[in-house]
Image (cartoon, rainbow, N blue to C red):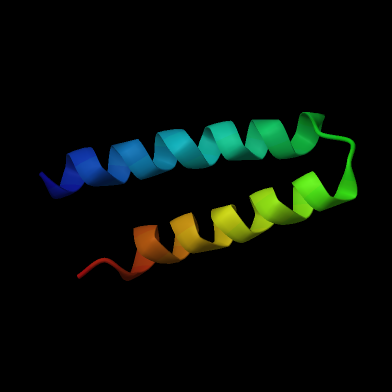
Length: 47
């Protein structure tokens, strides 16, 4: 189950990174960066 959770978070992280690269507006990029930080923290700090 933990592996499935990690795969889902990695999948969403990849899509957020792709969106971040394509987006031109600063505030939308800032919002995506905040979401990415939360996802990556959750990915690496899961017990």
